[in-house]
Length: 64
Image 1 (cartoon, rainbow, N blue to C red):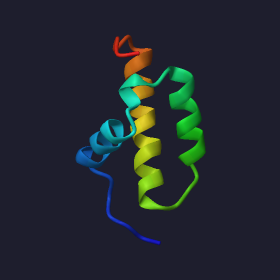
Image 2: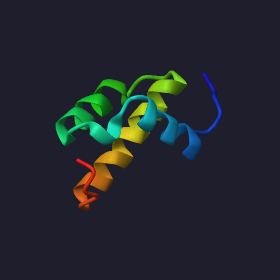
Image 3: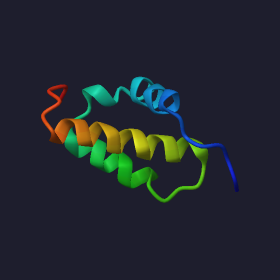
């Protein structure tokens, strides 16, 4: 199935909607793994958002 590209607005909506800023690194990793290979648009957005939050946490983002 072809869907539109994921935008920054989509990613931030997933981060806010799922409360990713309050998740631990382990929770974010589990969430990303759960959604990484799924085709639906929402799963793609969640996997990308979790990856973004993991990158921020690993560089010392200070939110976790």
